[in-house]
Image (cartoon, rainbow, N blue to C red; front, side, top):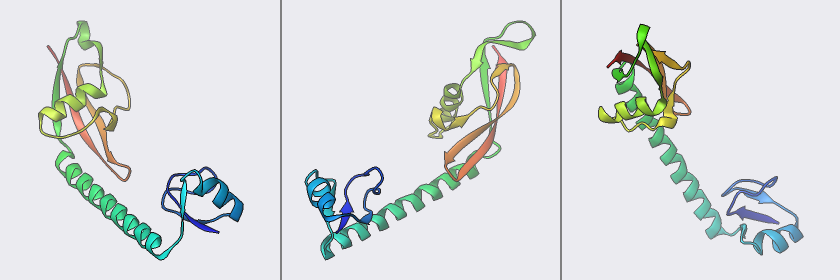
Length: 147
């Protein structure tokens, strides 16, 4: 029996996949629990349209990420932090600090997209990676100054 999955089913498939399952499993579990629907011409066409829309959405997201990466690449931001003797900071520069500064400059970057390789605990200039998309990332420069 062929069915179209409405949800991810472990060891069977993902949403909108057309899978072949045994008749009993399909009727008694998948269809009964509304995890799948039967394959028909209308249902197959609906799945085809959904997959096309998802592909278009993914393509647009990738283009937007590339455009943002071009604007961000090589950008320099300055953070003013409290520091003690010898330029040691009280605390550390966090990904939230970097994302907040980028938001002030007009970029919608979340703290999850900011990747700080080594902890920044001193005054100075550091490279920070911004991961905009699984396939797109860029490097910015963060200059930390004492208050």
